Image: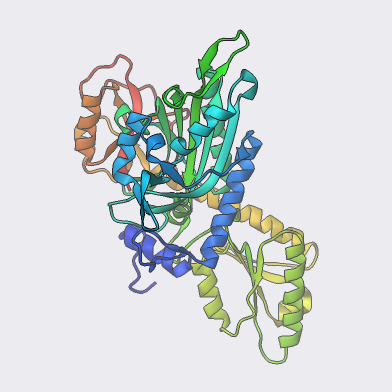
Length: 475
C-alpha cells in the first residue's frame, strides 16, 4: 500500500481513501455533504435496498411514497419532534418569485409528512395494523464534518412507519423489526448489538428508541439504524384514531424503523482492509469477475471460454463481469481487489484447455476448480466466502468489547466498554465524561460478550436495578 493510510492507525483517512479508490461515490459535487452516486456505488446501494425490501416485506410491510416537502403547520404539531430537528432542516420559502404562504420543510424524516394522511386512512380497527415503508431521500443540515455514507446532508433513507391497535402490538412490531434487521445484518455479514438509548438520547418524540450499533475499533461505534416506539406521542397531535370493536375511539400506537446509506459505509468500514473494500456477496455490484489471461496464440480459445463462462454464470443469477479490457492482468487484479469483488476467476490457456478456472477470493484464498460441476462449485465458493467473511467479522466484533469495573478505567480504553449502570442520568453523564464519549444505553437481548450479572453502578455504587450498559465514542 506504500504511503496509503492504514486501517489500524489512521482509520478515518483509510476509510475516505478506500471509498474513493473503490469508486463508490464522487464527493466533488458543489454542495457539501451531497455526493454523487457513481455507477459502481449505485449498484451496491441497489443490492443493499433489495435485501432490506425482501426482509421488511417478509415481515408484512408494503411500499408507499410520500412527498418531499412538508408544510410548516404539519411539521410543528409534535413539539418535542420539532425541537429535535429544528436546527437540521432546510426551509423552502419561495415558489419562483413569490413568497409561500406556508413555509415548507425538505423532509428530514417522514413522520410529519405521513401522519396527517394516516389520520385519513385509519377509521376502524379493521384498518389496523398499518405497516408501510418507503425508500426516499431525506435532507438534514449536518454541521459536523461530512463523510461519504456515514455523515451526509442528503441521505438515501429507508423508513418503515406503522400504526398498531395498542402498546403491546407496537412492542411486538419493534421485536419484529429487530428480527428483520438481524436477517439483513446476517446478509451483510455485520454483527451488531441492539441498544436501548438513554432518555436523553432517544429519537425526538419517541417513548423509547433502540439503536443498532456496531464497533469500529479503537472504542469507536457507529449507529447503523434504529427502531422507535412512539406510544401515542404522534397519534394524538395528528389525530390518528380508530373505532374499536366496542365503538370506542382510541388512538393508535406507532413505531418506526429507519436505515440509511450508512449501512454501505459500515460494510466498507467493518470488512475493508489495507488493500481496499471487501464486499459480502449480497451487496457486491460484481460477485464474480472473470479475468482472461491472454498470451501467445491462446487469445481466441481463452476469450471464447471466458465469454461462455460469463453467460453460464449470468444465467444462474450470478452478478458476473467479464473484464476483457486491454489492461495487464496484474492491473486488473489490483483494481478488482480494491473494489472488493468477492471472487476473481483467472482464465489462461491452461484453464481454457481444461475447462477449469483458478479462483481467488477477496479474503486471500486461492484454488483451482475443475470442469465437473463448475457452476455449482463457484456457487459453493461464494457461500464459503460469505461464511468466512462473517466469521472474521464476528471475531473482530467480540474483541471490540471489554468490561469496565471502575470509572477510572474508561478514559484510556481502545474498546467499547460494558459496565454496570443504575439508570440515573447523573451517573450516565459522569460515565460520558470519563470516557469522553457516550453512554450508548442498555443492550436488548444477548450481550456482545459473555458476562455474569451486573454489579453495583460504576458511579454511585447502587446495586438495586443496575443493568449492563455500553459506553463508547460514536462516529
